[in-house]
Image (tube, rainbow, N blue to C red; front, side, top):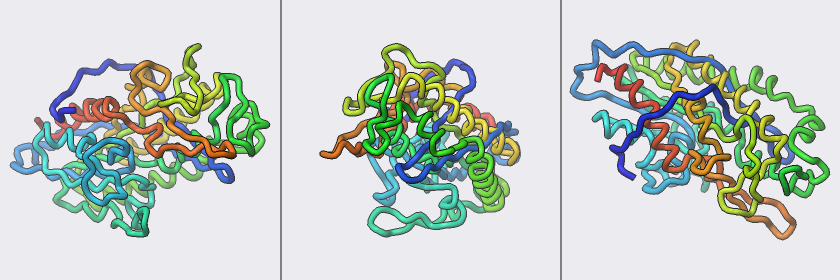
Amino acid sequence: MKLTRFRSRKTTRAITVLAAVAVASLFAVGAAGSASAAPLSAKSNKTIVNYVALGDSYSSGLGLKNFTGPAGCARSSNNYANHIANNLKLKLTDVSCDGAAADNIWKTPETLAGGSTVPIQTSALSASTDLVTITVGGNGLKFTDIAAVCAAKSPTGPLVLPPLSAFPNCQSYFAYAHTNFANVVNFSVIPDLRATYAAIRAAAPNAKVFVLGFPTIAPSAPTPTCFSPLTTANSYPFTTSDTPFLHGVETLFANAIRTEATNAGFTYVPTFEESSDDSLCVRHPYVNGVNATLTSTGVPVIDPASLHLNYKGMDFFADTAQPLIAAALGR
């Protein structure tokens, strides 16, 4: 895939991204808002524009090829930051890292597989930083957990995971567990996003900051052929009734990111909204489906790249953000 390739995009309706659960504990993240960026008039003529890319696996490029930087960060030269930097001729410092939670952006060094750590990501920022991009919050949603817990045997259920096989779908399980995703977003996700955005502004006081959303995964309504079993490649193993439910959780998260980014004075990049026609229920989605194997006891082992951006999706992220960034840079 060439870094110079971009396509025009259509505007679509508002959308979302998922929330999640582990077998014993549930996690979710989200926040609301939207903002606009004025051109960097004083800096638009700079020979060098210093661009720092922050974020989690949706920024780093988990599942893509050509990894750079620490092995555990799954940081690919095919990610959207590299697309944008190459096309706009920016000086890129990419510190995005697979597994990064909100705290790892500004407060707690991230521990990678094997025990090594990487510094907090805001340590790459300074008063000379001109441009910042970020995706954050997805790891609070535990996508691989939701794939394991919510995966069903058929479009009408029940759930696959042996301890939960008595439940016909995720909605019934969440009701049993007294899980209220609106409360999780309001009392956990939003405070995390506010603290993260404030830390970015403090560390890069002169930068234009662009907050990308996440891609649509579950559509607002499934098609008759949407469901596919967990053990098939790039599957969509969620019930017909769970699909709009999961879409609603995604919407909570998307709205939270949009609102908090706007309130922070940052520019929200509407990747949720613009990918609503490219969910896992279409022929060529922007994300990988769920790829899994089952153990001898029937427990799903989920590929970490499941529900993450594929090459088409990463190209779309760059295509959506680049015009906004170019305008802010006066290019």
